[in-house]
Image 1 (cartoon, helix red, strand yellow):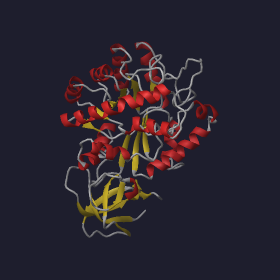
Image 2: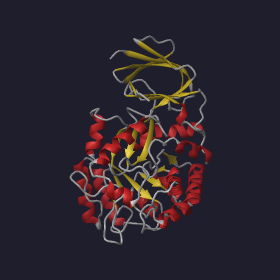
Image 3: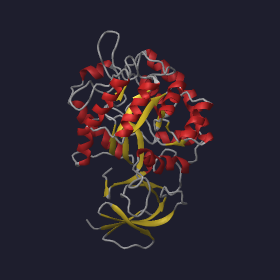
Length: 403
């Protein structure tokens, strides 16, 4: 592999420095030099383009794609789900998202298929199964007696996700680590897509969450919490969980707790809108799910506004899978519309997201020595409005992805 020069782009490097025109030299998948007038074996002229680090999405589900109808679930052959996931991963990569945190559904085989180059997609950290209490968000039991989980039933490599009590929690975390989980995900409240839970009700007790965090920390894993209810958010923060996913019902105390603990917020603003879009398009959804989605939109957005005003650390995440994959960049525009500057939005989608995931030593910024993940957008303005049509080049580990 020779030396490729990505030349003359307006480089937003994600470090906090002002964007400026520069060349980026890449060899063997790494950034080896940044400057002006650099020489190499191949030159790609990015004049008139904004160049950013590869983007992150800290909350995706590749095993689903915006259709949670029982009919779709029941009529999709088991193995078909993995082929569909591969196409969704490719769709996501084409938006410039080169790294994701898979928040439930994809197992170690999906991750390794991407790592080995068998399928194209973002590199990923996987949580595998979403830990849920009995009757919680993530328990797929329905009143008819059937179990229709949001991702997949247990199978080799996908442990059962329903757990009650500290002892079961300890064992379940160990099972997930054994299965290859890079991060542990737990539901500390109800949610929108689980038909019989209330987003304003907390799930799991303090002793269960304490064991969870202790076991995960001992195994070198971070914990992420699906947390919509105010009390569920606070319980997660008290337990030392690293990130709050969704954060729908934040109050002043919860926001201050996040600031004091350094807890990240992954807002997924687009998620309830995606549920309502699906309903409008005729996807078969229970009315109670549609009603819950409609009820959380405004309070979710207001909570986000208050969080950014207070200075809570934001890492971009979409909950893609709740809505079709490939629309990840819609979240950036929502973040800006609700008060973040375009620069702050891009930082949340690059450097800050890499810090949340613990990979900032190799990814998240354009700096010498880091992995060469780059995105080039047409136009040099730092503007996150309608970004998807502007994606012109996506580079992952030095290799350009065919769009």
